[in-house]
Amino acid sequence: MMEIFSFITGGLFRLAPEIMKVWDRANERKHELEMLGRQVEADKARSDARFQLAELEGKVHLSVAELQAMMTAHQQQAAPIARTGIRWIDGLNGFMEGLSKSVRPVLTYWYCVAAYGAYKLVLYRQMLAQDFAWDEAVLQLWTPQDHQVMWSIIGFWFVDRALKHMGR
Image (cartoon, rainbow, N blue to C red; front, side, top):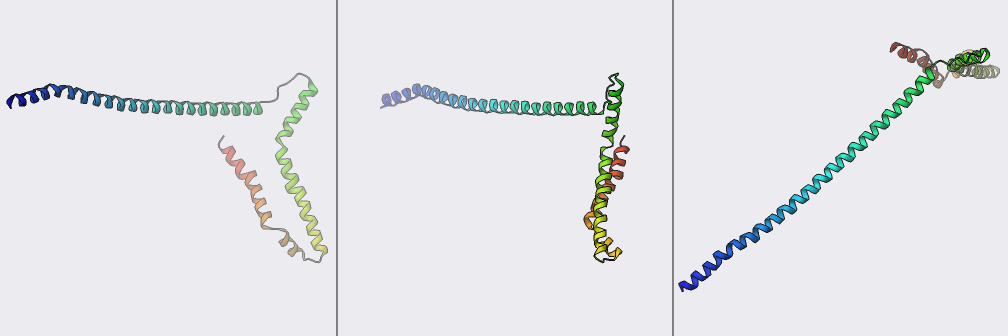
């Protein structure tokens, strides 16, 4: 009986290291597979970060290019007109440059004072022809919209321009 017991235990003890090696190799493969998966995740994260960095750099370069184009355009618009040496062309250029600076004031006076004033004057005369009292006609002609337009014009010509000149 002892022989059978020693035969079985001796076989088991010889078989045990082999079983341990198989189990260890399985754990090693599992570990290698897990590390490979983590490596793939890390590579993916690195490539995503590089892609985001490249995209951000592209946006920055685009913004810089747009700002440089705007600065160039403003510098060209602000630059005085170059003299050609031909007297009548230089005179015409000077006249046009001065005219371009007076476009907004001329349009403001024309549309807001002359044209709109004439429109209100015609309405006033029609109301007087229909037997309105002059003070009643004026009260009906001055609407809340007229009041808003007046304050926006005053704000543009005095407040906005004063704030712009204050920063210079």
